Length: 544
Image (cartoon, rainbow, N blue to C red; front, top):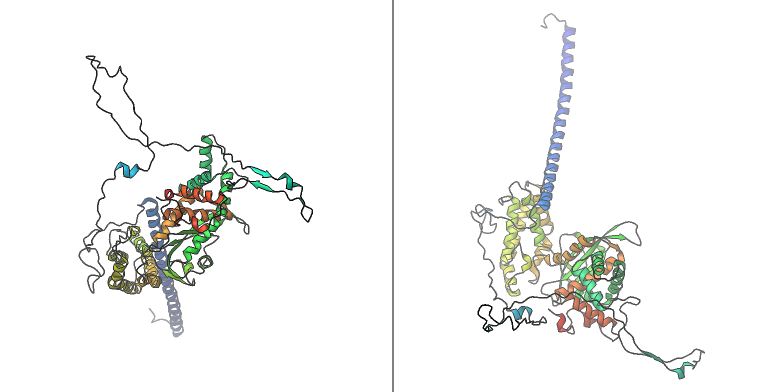
């Protein structure tokens, strides 16, 4: 087709094809670059889609699923990470010895209710009823048909007026001192003072209202309505003002509890949000936090202290724990880092929860042959090594401190080293889900604090002690919603500390609060140390 073309035409055609070839090469390069960009975008979108799907699965599980961290394990094909060298999978789930228990004998009536006041009531037949209806003969008395019941006596409200006689000396009434002022001599009878000046609240009423709010989590408006149904007018504002004043009176006791807490070797710490509607230095609603500090299991004092602060910054625990030197159980929050004297101990329950969440987002939640399942089973085996149920760590181990120390040296430490080596290997591989990557990262980031549990046999694997202490605040948050001011949140922290510490020391909260308020208004001298929940001067009838 080109035989009849001239040289000029052939050169023009050649030049056209060369330019066209260069153009197509450039277009092909641009297309390849666009394909690569779209491929990278597709990978990013897929990763984001996987992450959103994981969050959706966790949200659905939290909303509709079982509120438990228990898992159903099928024995066939499950894992024991530490039994077979060089292999991560074995054929059967390892057997473990469950904690044995003994069934206690049934308690008698006297053991259960012997301390309660009791009375007996007899009902007799009349003389006419003792005559047989059929033959008219006198009937034989067989005894009594009896049953026992517990009677409830509602609270009794009464007005108590206290009069204290006073006298003045008429002879000295006209005497003047060197400044020309009168010097009358007054004498007043000894007797109790008003618990709050200008208020009609008594120690028993104050103890009942604080017990109802803090222990039973009742809102003040519910208490106001109950008073109204009993024919008593007592507004919620009055009750609120009384609690604020009483909390300020109890502040020396609260400070003593903090001082005692700072002398301990081991504490647990956690925090939970709390809404405050009004602040003096800031307009609008504030998201504050209750910081909770609890004594360790083997400490000589059982203390739970609550501290309200306006934020979650690291400066708050650092300021509160000034002077403390020892081990502190906490979660992975970075606010507990770099606190002088605070040796941070990690929580294996939090670590286990990360791997459990990774298992929950799998297509098959019962498949524990995955990376998430392997890590989950490894952590379970660490719990089992110390005779702990990972699903019920609050029950505690039956081992002595000496036995715990030996097990941690011979068993727990090798298990932890193998677990973290496995995490380091898996972090270099391509992991199947974002939740799995998150669990591996958390384990490696918290390695130092988690390994610190090996330093002292008194240290626990979990921070559940502090998490249980947070629960009263969480339940109260659902019922009360918020505090109107910082003063109210501060008062709550004092009342929570005293009530929860009393419960931890097996005291009757109502009787203990009444004992404190009776001491405050008695007019007699006392030491605040005598009112601490573990004081030997606490009357026996207050103890459970």
